[in-house]
Image 1 (spheres, rainbow, N blue to C red):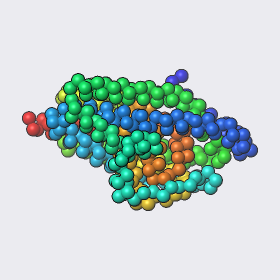
Image 2: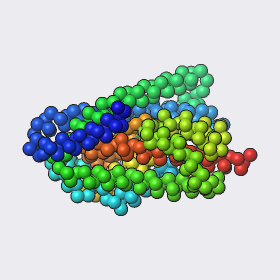
Image 3: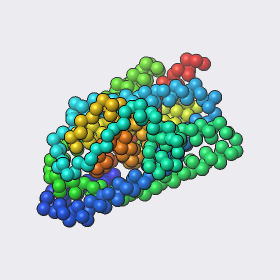
Image 4: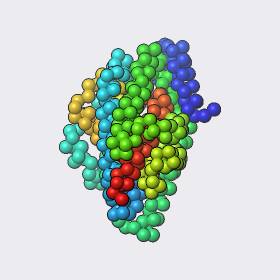
Length: 399
Ligand code: ASP
């Protein structure tokens, strides 16, 4: 039985068992089951620092010779960043309309203290790591991201054999991180069961409906982003009709939907954009791997929806500052997200942390994460292809 089916089953099982046990079992469930769920969350959190650092350095160095790739690189990065930020905003808008999580009314005892969110200027100030090791020890992600970008730039400017050693090292390290995440995901069915069952025992059937609304938000948000943003990018830059674009992408989208891995979908995506969308090989082989590493619009959309959902669940109103902060950290977090199943869930922890939203909210999202992952991975790889089509067209005009 494959992992996604197992996770689905454990999700269903946790709800059934939780409902059968009822709130009479709260004590033993809290003592014996909930800690196993927490262990799963800790395992995921264990990977935040190594995966962010290694995959970002690899992402940076995969740009290679900065001068040669400068023009295409800047164009690609700009579109990637803008579409990612738009995705989070769409996430807020959709979640604002559907209001997932409202009325879930978790008991106040479950709502942990909320840290005061820093202002935007404090965030910029705190982004610069005065001591990167201290930032890593504290799992302070923003400074780690900045440090990783510097390390990547340093390796590129070093060049030659010495740089190759480091590139190989970080490449292999990132690969090891993905492997470990894969191992952790293997116990996800147990983790999900132990996370969700205590919630159901404590809260009964009323937790279900808001979770369905999160899935609905994700589906609606993905369709809006794909149809409005990607169709416009391909249409305006390459005069490509949405039908041609999405038909050309259908194979890769299906693979992404089922594998939940941008990295795993990359070979199919490379083939699709060249053979079906007419993108030049040199452009596809630069834009797509870079996109699979750093461009995750689906993940960003998910950050927007889930943070609003978790704020709703715990009855914490988000301020404008906090929303801006989520757009900023969400954009950066999606860049650092590994293109592997469940990569975004790890990064969601970081976004929640940045605005002081309760980490316990992750437990609710983790239960349905696989379903959400299908939508976000699909959007992630479609975004890479849309940008490849656009860059291909603008480069063709130049030559
Ligand atoms: N699974 C996603 C991807 O591979 C990453 C994520 O979990 O958000 O693109």
